[in-house]
Length: 197
Image 1: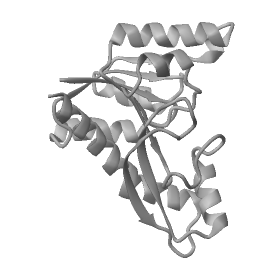
Image 2: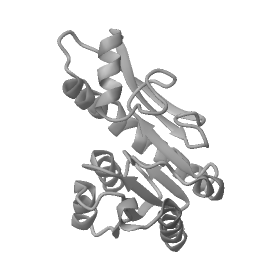
Image 3: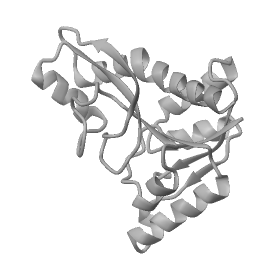
Image 4: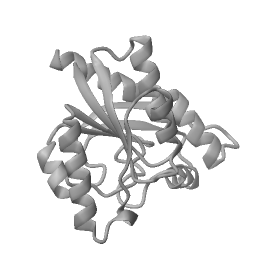
């Protein structure tokens, strides 16, 4: 059984896709042992609660220093003991120690076809705004392993999504989620879980 911790900052739509995938059996041999958010108001924590998944808020705002926050995050992860950590819209710079401790055990979903529109500052709507500004005809999403760089880890899956005439960043964001993110993130988790089996 692959025990996963999902780290989130906002609405948790990718978390919901994972919950749905596990209950539908498209993500096999997997259970979510915890959801961690850096934002107490994140709807993702409500989703965790509604599905009887332990949810935790660990916010840098609640600690005197970044080092204290990093330690609290590491302590919670050690307690949950995950086989895989899934970053599903987690807008926090990971502590170096976390990347080292969980080497090749952290994956992230990014809303573009890496290496386009990725790296520092590219998250959320900003990614889609830039894609539209550049006039690309195809965008998409990428699931990748996390390393010390920003969006530089080994790519697991990518899925392309067409950019349509008249798209706004919000419309494009929704299409990328529906046609790419919610498909390839569950698929990546399932593949990792079946390898562990």
